[in-house]
Amino acid sequence: MTYLSKPLAKLFGMLINILYHFFEGMGIESVALSIFALTLVTRMLLFPLNFNMSKSGRIQQFLKPEFDKINKKYKGKKDQTSMLKMQQESSALRKEYGIKQSMGCLTMLIQLPILWGIYEVFRNTSDYIIGASDKAYYLFGMGSEFKELFNLSSIPNDPTWKSPKLIIPILSFIFQLLSMVVTPMQSTGDEQQDAQMKSMRRTMMIMPLFSFFICLSLPIGLGIYWISSALIGFLITLGTNIYFDHCNMEKIVEKAKAKAAVKNAKNDAKGKKSFMDKMMESMYGSDETSAEDSANMNKYGSLRLKNYSSSNETGDSGFTKSDVKYKKGSLADKANALSRYNEKGDSK
Image 1 (cartoon, rainbow, N blue to C red):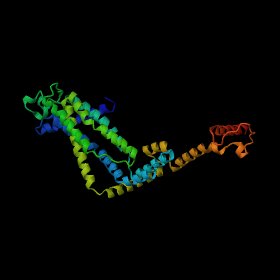
Image 2 (image 1 turned 180 degrees about the horizontal axis):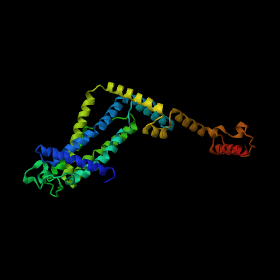
Image 3 (image 1 turned 180 degrees about the vertical axis):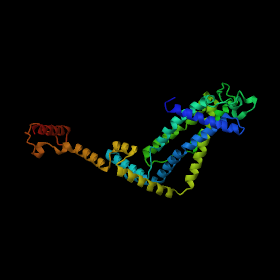
Image 4 (image 1 turned 45 degrees about the horizontal axis):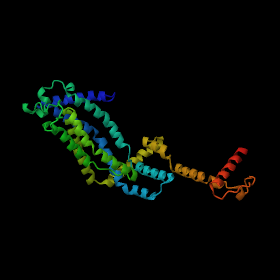
């Protein structure tokens, strides 16, 4: 365990112990129910982050015509200057409406140590739940004939592929797949980024299969967590989609714009810049003038040899005429012009 996941495992261990004894006081002795309840608690704690990420994606999707205008403006232009300007205009539009591209990464970074902590708790549930009866470790208190099959500490992997325990990894696969299917792929307004997201989504579709094989080789208690997490995630995503499909997106977008304007004004007054702003500046420059400077550098760099043409043509370099004559515009003529230019600089 990492330094961060270890204290989280202790915290979640305390929570699942409290939940178990809460249900025990109601006459329900079930570790599986405690696992489901703890999973629900953690998903609800992460819900604001996931909701804001979904809202940001919906706002960006709503503004897709604006992003399409920017893409159309620079369509077919592959030079560096045009690409820089397109990225700057897209970034400015996102900033105007408070769209944060880093929201998804932030959510994943927060979830990762939580998953590590929960994994440790559900892998060794008996170490964290104090005073649980043997009956509590059987799936929802099933009868004695199911004890060996659905003991939460057992592993469902069965060489015959006929064990009833396989229902755990199968359900994990089904609910993970459903959760992936209902998760909408948000458009970024950038053709290249959209193509990358489509490719990433296709890759992520193997995750349900991955969870199936994980549940085959780990205790059933951890499989209960995977099923619970996938089921709750599916319901949350479904509810979020229904909400945004029936709400007034124009009002949400206007509120987001007003909120972003206040925040941007405060940051500008303090000279404060977000992480994404700093990263964009390091990549594309602080403003549009940087792109213009880049264009000028490219322009003068490409015309340098033309500006210092052969003395036979201009007569202003003071270079002694040679018996050797170069064809105008040839590589040798340009090399000769560059040589004279360097010699002129050295003589100053």
